[in-house]
Length: 317
Image (tube, rainbow, N blue to C red; front, side, top):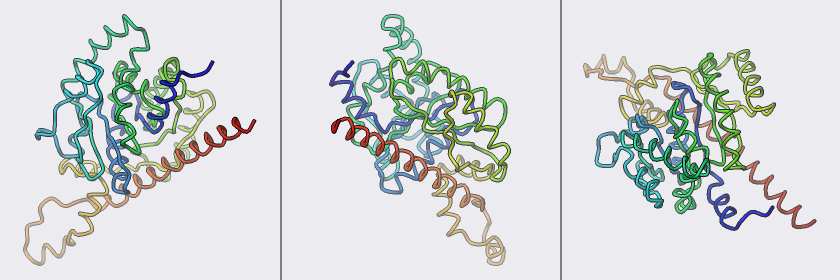
């Protein structure tokens, strides 16, 4: 059956929408969403970051919580309620716009329950509907999802073309991944082109190859033998994570600050107060996110080239 023109337009507009999802908390969803968005924006891509989390931790990672830019999700709720195009906050960083999350997202759950009761699963297309009019303004859109909120997570799955799934190697992260796999299949009823972009290990040892292989096997089991898993892992670096939340800076911004930071012994020699110092691990963590961003772009490029080749073959035949 041929697709309607509006569905083709929707698929094209949302072709580079990535949702970051795992039903388990603490697996790095927000850190990955913020840092990948920041790395891509720094590389001259125009990026939209959409926060579906009531805790709005993205506002901490990007340093704008409690400022005049922080609407606590009110604009996102109103766009969905009245089916209006999203209105992002512009230039949180150069080339990085944000649709804020926050406490007002609590109103989305009863709103969506009402809509699902009357329209079924098609109601979960609404986030894509309000994103579609502005999606062409961006090279990449990244949606950060909350843990253990199936309604908000399903909104993201209804809008996204790609799923990026962070996980830890512990049982909780892997169980959360398995739960997402079930909802991923259900999302295809209304969003048939949604695809697993890949799984990424977060907060792990860089040389834990046995653990990495085990996770790869679990991904394959959860997604029916299909186990795309990024080569890049995000290493465990608690001090850098603390520095990021304390300062509202991303890993590559901490890396720049680290490069200009005087050695501790120089501060001692000059008698200047040491103050809070950026951890030396910031450079390594920034490199992890940079490598992951490059892998994501490569996977997208390969998928888009394959799709073009299929279209050319279809036309020629």
